[in-house]
Image (cartoon, rainbow, N blue to C red; front, side):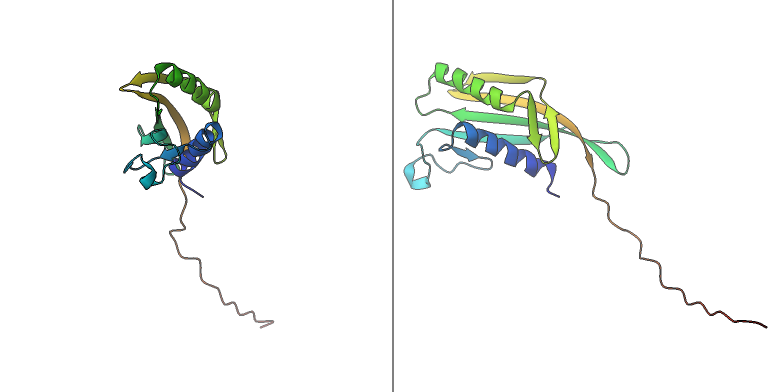
Length: 151
């Protein structure tokens, strides 16, 4: 089974591509925003930060995980009105329920702000994750049994 962080990444990418199919979504690094770097729309892109926070051990089988997701959107024309409209589109795609893997998590609260000509849409999620169990002991060996009849 894929790790929940990978599942969240795939779900967010799918949501953003559903809003803007031709806009690139980055997670690691943006080397450049020109045509020579392969971007479809020069200057318009998403950059997503997925930050694990607040992981707590419940017992040897379960961990409560917290994840902060920050979606940064840069518009080619850098208009505040366009950013607010895009923020509403992202909000409609993310809330009320974010689905990833076999989970469906209610997003109660999200924040949106425009700073330095970039829209930041952020939300936090918490969920319980079952650790994969590994078989730590060797299987029991076979038993040989001899039966005598009558004495």
